[in-house]
Image (cartoon, rainbow, N blue to C red):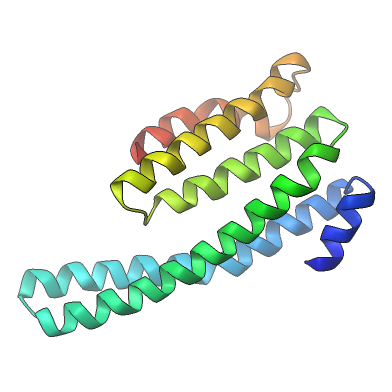
Length: 160
């Protein structure tokens, strides 16, 4: 990731490099998100059975997963804030980075407390709105991100 960061500082990433960045982070977080969902389901089952000893252990393990995911999300958000978005010269690049940024803020809302969830949801909304501006100025209705940006509001309602 350091190499990508160095490239992004000096020049804009190509479409292929942007896609690789996105896929890399999706692959990194995929197992963590799946683990969090599974362990949350197990926790609910154990709570309904009244197994407080198991619930305590599960809660501790889930906290470790949340810390790991938060660290990864913070890393990509830091990268997105510091390099690619400010240097993006084309509308599609800015839309790509802002949508990616908003997606990672949205992922954070999945396991945050109510107060932190609200903050993450607001950051998500801000980033999605910023992604829409270049898309509105120079729309490309054939591009899939155009639809994703318009339909996100329905999805975001679930997190708020």
